[in-house]
Every structure is written in C-alpha cells, then in structure tokens.
Amino acid sequence: MGELNRRRLLKAGGALSALGAMTVAAPSTAWSWSPAGSVAGTGAGLDPRWVWDDPVDSLIADVIDRGDAQLVNDSMKRWIYNGQAVPSGAPADVQEFMNSAIQLPAWADLEKLDVAFDFCEKWGLYLGVLYGMNSGMMSTAIPREARAVYYSKGGWDLKDRISKTAKLGKDIGDHHAYRSDGKMSVTCARTRMTHAGVRHLLPQSPHWVAAADEEIPISQRDIMVTWHSLASSVWQKLMEWDIDVPDDEAEAYLHLWQVTASMLGVLDEYIPATWADALAQREQILVPLLGATPEGIKLADMLLDLGKNLDATLVTRPVLESFTRYMLGNKITDSLKIPRHFILDPTIRTGWPIFVKIREFGLNLPLSEKLYWTFEELIRVVVLIYMSEGIEPILIDIPTANNPNP
Image 1 (cartoon, rainbow, N blue to C red):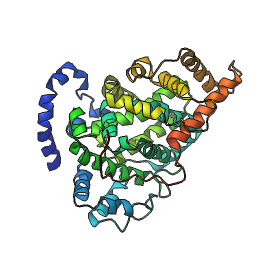
Image 2: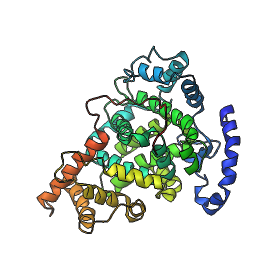
Image 3: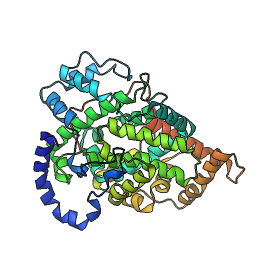
Image 4: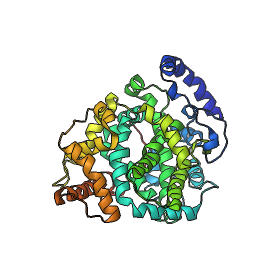
C-alpha cells in the first residue's frame, strides 16, 4: 500500500468509528469477495473502500491547487484518439501520467476486444436503452454515487454530466475502441483525472460532508459498484430477455469491461474473471445498497425530465417512468418516488419482452402497431438523451468547482 493510501486509511479511521453502528447493522457491506475469482487470481484482499487511485490523485490535487487545471483542460481539447501523442501543452508531470494511463494491461487481448465490437454492433439498440434507462437510472439509487454526482459539478449541470457518461458508453462500443484509431484509452485516462479532481474537491463541500458517510469519494469499491450497474446489470437483463449470445461474444463483452475497469485504475484483484464471478460480486456489493437518498430522488426527477424538450410524439415522461419501473422494479422506483401508472406499467412490462422477441426472431406475435412504434421511439429518445454527442464534442476534463447551488 502506498504512503498516500496509508494516510488515507488512518484518516478514514474516524469515519469508520462514526459508521461502526451502521457496519454492525449491515454486515453485508463487509468485503468478503475472494480475489481468487478475479483476473489476477490472487490478491491482498484489502477492502476496496480504502483504496483509491494514488498515481493520479496526488497529481491532480496538486494541479488544481497550483492553478493549472484550466491549462490542462485546454491542452486536452484535441486529445481524442488513442494513437495521438499526449498534449504538449500540459505540464510535464501530467504528460507523464497521460502516457502511462493509456497503456493497456498486459493481459488485454485486442482480438477478443474486436469480437466485443461484433457484440456491441449486434445488440447496440438494447445496450443504448440499458445504459440509459437501466444503468443511468440505477445510478440515482446508488447512495454514494448519487451524493457524489449531486454535490459535485455534475449536479449543477446534469445534462453535461450525462453527456460525459454517455461518451464513455459510446466510445466503449465503437470499432477499435482500444486500438490506435479508437478513443477509449484516452476517455478512460481523462475519466481517471476527473475522478481525482472530484476526490480532491468534494471533501471541500460542506453540503457533501454533511450528507456523506465517507471522507473520500469514488473509492475502488465505488467504481466497481458503478461497473456492476453497467456491465453485469446489462448482462443480466440480456439473459432475462433470452438473448442468444454466442459464447465467444459473451466472453469478449466481459473482457471489454474488464479492460475498462483496469483502464479506470481498478486493481486486477477486484476485477471479476468470469460472468459468474461478476454476478456473484454484484450480489454482494451492488444489490444490497440500492435505495433512495434525498440526492438520488432529485437526480432521478432531473433525469426523467431531460427528454421533455425532444421532438417525441409517443415517448412522454410517464412512458419513461414506466420503463424505469420495468427495468428497476417496484421497490427501487417507489423509493425514488417515481409514480406508478396503472395502464402503462403493465403494458410495458408485458409488451417489451414481446418487442424483443419480434426483433430477435422476426416472430409474428400479437403486438399493436402503435405499441411497437412506441418502443422504437423509446429507443430513439433514450439514445438522444444519453448517447448523443450533439454538435459540440464532449470533453471529459478536470473539474474546478463543486455544485454551487445544491
């Protein structure tokens, strides 16, 4: 463990004391997942709640404190593709980090990543909906993530925050995502820098400090919780919908997310080796904590409102609310104060699986034309909200402030 981690672990002791009763009351939060199920196959077994991203955290904290954040952000405006040289206008220590951060892990398999593109191309419509209405809405029910988003700059400009998250979702599914003509290595490096900025700034927000149950946000456990809201939650839904995925594509899609976790700074011992390992870890660290916070309720409302100005004749906010209920279930959506719709809810719950069967198998199943086109419109709207880059390029950069009006 690095010196910075040691200092953080000692500092976090006070938080552990304050949370002692909570920990006793909720033993499921303890870390017991074995590193034997990881891509490393072994590890120290340290709870990732007390592991952050030392190589970049101290660097970006220094960059912000010495007033260089805008300089770095400006220098990164044209840093888009993996094969590009790192920005020459960035300070030397930042350039050094950038060069190291875009290197793939030794175990990355580029041919397997190419197969993952076949998977993403084949089921891209479902992935777009799932990343938005399943993973995106689920993020509002992840307490630490909801607080971190709400009190950071993301809560001040949620559309910008969503567009940056959507960029990662788009770049990961692009052809050659991790090859020189792709963008994902750069996107991950920039995301690590953003996370480091949030770790430095959020503890300076009295609003976040008053609400949070941690002293430093976005631990490696937090990152893996978000990873499961994306990778394993999407995979679980595809299996629920009886999508027939060839074994090599299933393995490749997991590999895509394994590499992404590593590129986001997660240690190999926390990255699941198989889908079975991933789903087991998901049950331990994601499922038990899902529930509403005041911040999550506000974010869910804001997210559902993002589509109101789009030119969509069939997809209204009630449709988005019912689809969220179908994705996340009654317990979570009730806690987020998302209203029930007694006609739309069962219609979507029954109609979406039929829609999937029609798309997958070309079956002539009973589904009204209006409902079919409603689902097609839903896909279009969700892609516009969550996945569109619009006219201006989306730039993931270092934050310089928290939410000024939480």
